[in-house]
Image 1: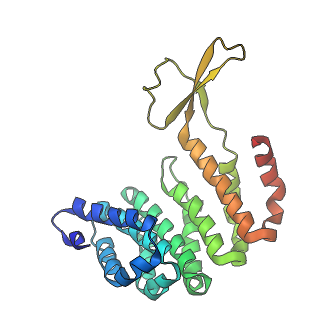
Image 2: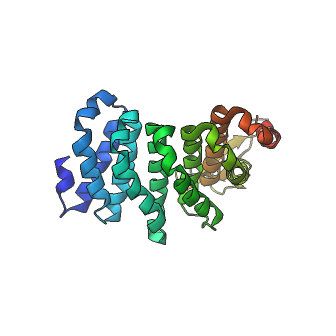
Image 3: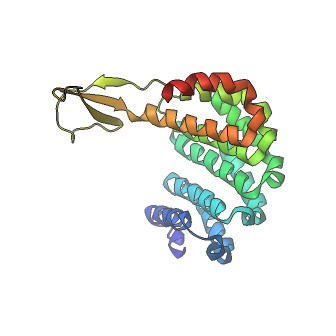
Length: 258
């Protein structure tokens, strides 16, 4: 924690916050609770420090801590949530897209951690920002899109049936993502080590065991599709009968994938 004070070396501060993320991943909350006050104090200071490389790790660390300590995060909620809401409003520049996506992740994880009774006072403001982001035309490479997709699912878990009125906004793009047809092309060359970033190759043998074809698949599309399918599972588990109007649409997409 002391290395977070190294203001002359932002990369050291960033790595310190990243270490907290790794530590909390499999940490029992009872281990972390005695250090919660100073730890969150340091992380919030990093978040407000202004260096984006540090902020991006600090906000994920805060989310990881909330996910670890769960309901015990409620004692710090009123100090941290206003800052996160302000970031959702202010971080709109292109260079802040990843930071804003991580802010969505952090807000939604905190919502689950503290529970509906605590989070509900801020839920409407948060969802208004999410809806504004969703209705805007995001660039194909905008990282906010995947963060938003998962954040909606967490808000559904945090708010339960109070989330149902927002399904009419959330479901159309979610179904579109679940119905993505990945771009598959026949790849040239036989070297399995020459894969491009974001491209996975699969070698398919012919039925007679003779010739084979090498196919290239864009993994980003597959990842988005998989995430959307997981979010649908989450919605049905949390909202139950509230998902009834979408049963046919979901079935039409899922059954052919079996």
